[in-house]
Amino acid sequence: MMEKVQNLIRGNAVMVFSKSYCKFCKRVKEMFAMEKITYHAVELDMMGDEGLAIQNALAELTSQTTVPNVFMHGQHVGGCDATEKYYRDGTLAERAAGTYEKRDYDLVVIGGGSGGLAAVKEAASFGRKVAVCDFVNPTPKGTKWGLGGTCVNVGCIPKKLMHKSAIVGCDIKDSPHFGWETPEEVKHNWEKMAGEVKKHIMSLNFGYRSDLVLKKIKYYNAYATFLDKHKLKLVGRDNKVEEITADNILIAVGGRPNYPDIPGAKEYGITSDDIFYLRHSPGKTLVVGASYVALECAGFLAGFGFDVTVMVRSILLRGFDRQMADMIGSHMETHGVKFIRPAVPTKITEKCTGSPGELAVTYKFEDGREEEQTFNTVMFATGRSPCTKNIGLQEIGVNLNEKNGKIIGDKLERTNVPNIFAIGDVLDGTPELTPVAIQAGRFLARRLYGKSNEPMDYKMVPTTVFTPLEYGSVGYSEEDAIATYGADDIEVYHTHYQPLEYTLPERDENKSYGKLICLKSTGEKVIGFHVLGPNAGEITQGFALALKLGATKSDFDNLVGIHPTCAEVFTTMFITKSSGISVEKKSC
Ligand code: FAD
Ligand code: NA7
Image 1 (cartoon, rainbow, N blue to C red):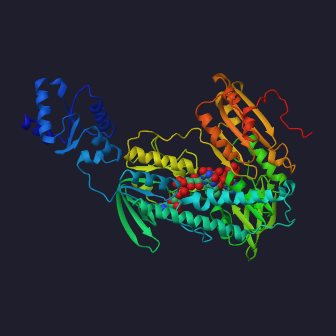
Image 2 (image 1 turned 90 degrees about the horizontal axis):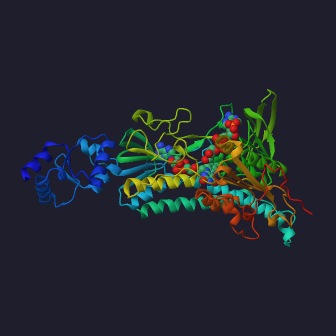
């Protein structure tokens, strides 16, 4: 019998000893089928005494008494868990074909940003040999930064700190109403603030680097390009070139800001990659673009007292709820931000050098009219492009969305090249947000090297726009809810509210607002949550859980509010939009 068993093992590249009813055996065959691997299986339970004898011989040969018992090219692999390990780490097909060669790393991540660092740390926690490559190409103005990616260096972190600085300014203005004897002229010092922000960012960069050392993760401060689907070329700061190989490669290279194709754009303009590192105050600033990066930056600059203009090509905050976007715009306008719309810049020239200098901006309205204005700083927030060019993706056949250059992945973030994955801003069709990249990175590493099968859930992702009046949302916008379910199935509850902290300084009456979008046919399940007001991000985070768990309007009504807060308005929201009743608060 032993000879028969050994002949089966020698005679078949992939041999499975199985039992027809065994769920682990079925799983092994399923994995082979998914990887298009040809195998030979014998079902021991269908062979009577011979099956029993084979099982005994296998036990003698491998010390394994259970099925499935898998062999590849004469080598014992083991059972379902052992086979699944190769399936998860992407080497099963190569091992079955007998072409597997030991590589330098189990996983190499390209991009040390939010997603990449989360994934590589999670993979390391499973004892895997992993590395991360991160390299920042300086902006046309020469700005560069350390490890951590967009969020830490040129995104969420400096943005929120500067937003906070602007809010502190508002609070100082309000402070006499709360009894503070604040001097009339309180000045903002850009250089001081930018220096403090930079110091904080550098401490985070340092923290990331030491964390990698602590977790035994190899860090390459180098730009990575694919040589083949398992091999990368790394070019370091000193132009030192290295080649490394990995079973799996994760692309988490994020994106960089776009410049419009007009004379003077790159020469004189800056983007969000420069604004946080400006050594001198920006002065009179033009922000081109109308999405959240544009409005957030315009918001904090105006808060510091700069003369700020936003140039809008079409609408504010494309993709967000229209009513909320327009309310944000009108609030910013009443607080001194100017809007030029609908217009695009056509040319920038330098009038005089300096820190800041003077730039002449020519711009064209939709009706063809042209005008010119002088600004000290021109900042483009005209979208971002994924860093997928010139990294060898076309050469190794990774599919990209031709329209936006993003990587196409399946529900498990796997590209069409099975050992290559993509997460974060570079993955097509997913929200460009730090917590999304982090969660996707962690889940992917757990699926590859842990025991999890859980896919990342990209639905009901909450977000906040940190404009002077913050806007938090989760779920459908009113337009999308109507387009998806039809106007007859949608009920919108809404209200204006006055934050208590705005009452003494008599600030921004009827500017704060909340609405719940409900689906009538499902017992008024809340499918959209929108809030405009102070601390909107903090409010939205908690309510997002309620929406994710399927809360209905009556669940909101049954919830007892916390008084006095802004969030409590969502527990007492009884006026529907369809009723036409005014939701404006009257002061007296
Ligand atoms: P990134 O964080 O961009 O990291 C990619 C890294 O890969 C970078 O360090 C890059 O230099 C490096 N890299 C690129 N190519 C290579 C290569 N070939 N070799 C080696 N390294 C390479 N999100 C929020 O959730 N909340 C916010 O408030 C928020 N505010 C934002 C404000 C601004 C101004 C901007 C621009 C973005 C903001 N975002 C915010 C979005 C958030 O920053 C991104 O969604 C997040 O950083 C994406 O993470 P990532 O891992 O995909 O890529
Ligand atoms: P978005 O969300 O892509 O928005 C780009 C904005 O810039 C939008 O208002 C565009 O107007 C406008 N735009 C684009 N090209 C031009 C030109 N050539 N001229 C004038 N205006 C233009 O980009 P953001 O930079 O705000 O943010 C991108 C991501 O970064 C975001 O998802 C976050 O993850 C961080 P349009 O509406 O197309 O008319």
